[in-house]
Image 1 (tube, one colour):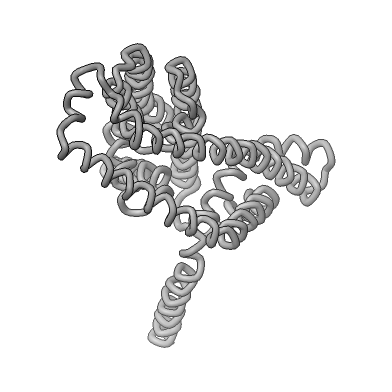
Image 2 (tube, rainbow, N blue to C red):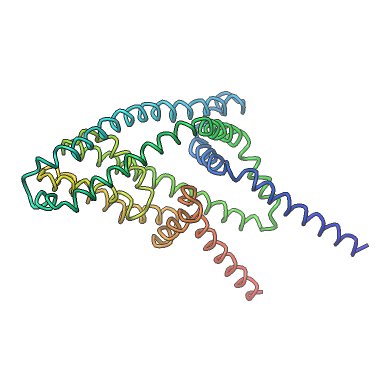
Length: 340
């Protein structure tokens, strides 16, 4: 009989692993949407609790908050996309004009002397052609990916709705399944909450601040597409250390090429400010709130981005934080055993 029970347990374990792998393969394509929905439900959960206390109805409270999430995300996103498309069109035409006409008229500054060399001009023209080809290809890909993006958005909002409504019960069920003591479970879930809150709030806050500073700098510098470049810097702010420099360093060099010293200085000041925030303030902010060393935050971000893409921004530091938590728990368990 004991052998029979062991065989049944082994059979169930094998089936569980098999179907867990199948389940992962099914949701793998939508993992980003599921995590995004989980993040949104976490951010808006206090609002859900307020509506639930007011109406005493889970479905109604979750539906109202989900509708608010849709409005808060889609309305600004639509306006931003429209402005970006408008500025991208203006920026492309302006850049094309610079490439094919103003380079010929460039007479001031050290960089203008460099442009007189045939090799440099040829390299610039070839680079511009590659950029044009890439943008055309990307444009086609974006158009054809619209149905998939809509499906992802729908999944995000459905995930948000159900996690707002049932998230508390789901967490309670997970906690019942674990063999850990309640004290240990509490420690793990608290660490998860702290790290998630630190990364989301830290990175979103920093990205918004960097975007605003960049937009002001580009506007003062007289750049015709400040929102476009500021948005790109805000997005690249999620890449630690080097993100914003990908935009502002070439922008400064381009202004110097045409002898626009004032614009170059303004963009340089804005860029240094943004990079200082990105390099020194962000890791400390995230590390302090998450109670892990800033170096581990940076390593987790780089490793997470490389391994999992954008999801890794959260998953990377979260994984390292959990490893530290488990090591601490193991040490505490050993101390308790020695004490006995």
